Image (cartoon, rainbow, N blue to C red; front, side):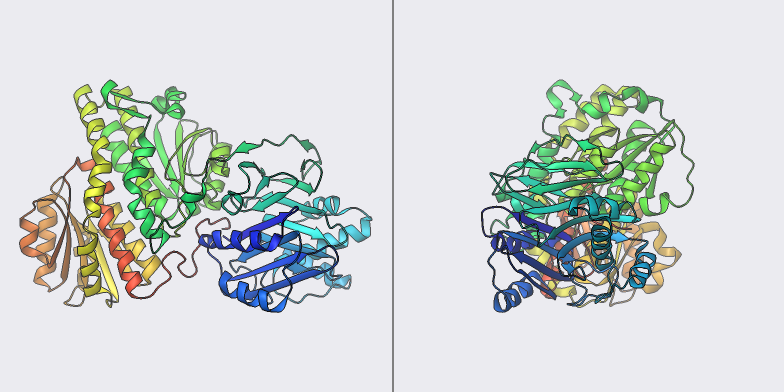
Length: 615
């Protein structure tokens, strides 16, 4: 949540900062602001609303000159979304300016103490408390900005990524991180600061990702100094070469990032298994699994921890691991797992799933599991992210940047990685024959082409969306491997169209939801030929007898459901365990088209953020 952008160098800062904020809009926000410094005057503009609103306001009310600038998109925590609570924030003297992601949990006690010392506050934010705490330390300790930031941060409780500068030091920005991500781009006598690398990718490929409880003093003409906040120890920063390219973070001719990312899934799935799935050699190569095979084979159970769409991918993996590898699996909401005193032993494997690799609740669950001696395996999409660094081992998905807040290709690439893991463990345990193993590999190789085939239903899905766009409720039903897909389909519709939707196991319909069904209720039923097909057909008959509107997701060539349903969307045939990779496609398209027809902000749905870095 929230986005940070900063620049110090020889270029004009404003164009870099404003474009950077536009690239971070996917993170979710409700206000935006920029502070620019030209060596003599700080110019600040901020507003409730979108970056486009900020751009219009800023260019009409202040000069955009200056080679130092910081910008922010805020997702409200302390204080309602308004102009005053927006970042950046001044200190009382007006010398210091700060932007901040995260939450200062002890801000209230700090604020009361600062008020006693004569400080006043214009906003309701914890961030204004932090900048004045830094100023208070700087004044009372008679110290430089960097040292003042360090001392102040040792007094706060919470999470933060901050960038702060002092108008008396025109060539310096101080940054620090705990919990929220922060990247520093290194150019030629210029430095870039951002929540991720997308705002500066066209300027430099070299970046430092700060670790938790690290701060950096960034000065023009000097090397970056990175220190530990707790003990002031110097850190030798690791400069990594970014793999991201500019084309990946542009829309590429699509109306929305979400639609682009839906259509990128064939390539994303292929990239995720490329080099790992070797069907001609009957092999799966996952270094994180191979290097820790003894731990996996000795495990009593696997516990999957995740949130949102990643949790649904984890639910699919529960069916796959148990079916193929015969390992007991529990799937936990990371946000609940950490607070319920879970029973964890050294014989447990924890699989933590997160698209961004920065999900706060999932990171906290990882730390809890590690403290109990469990082995933790990460599955995420962002190289160098916090989860990638915190886990004992892991596997990256190769989805490329996912800008749309509602995850699509993250879901299918996560399932792809988890399927490869299950197949490799099944072969190692002997719970699958060599011929079955090879058959699964060959079939998984065909999935990108079959996803392309499923995407051809787009025009027909659009006509269905037009019929049901005004519905106020949807019900999604699935069984077995496709029950989590029903949950994910309902989540997508809720996220971007704001229509109430619920996902259920199809058999559970009779235990409550059937009371909702009438001629106004669209019911999406996943009814592929594999698995519990006859049972699902019976459920469809029960819906039809109550006049529900049935949208069936079926295997190509299906006849039974076609006779009963109002609409049928076909997907290619595949193995039962791989059907979620296909059945989710029309559900993504349905949600997308309904949201577009309702004039919703598809890529940036209200109240949501891509990277949830606070609890």
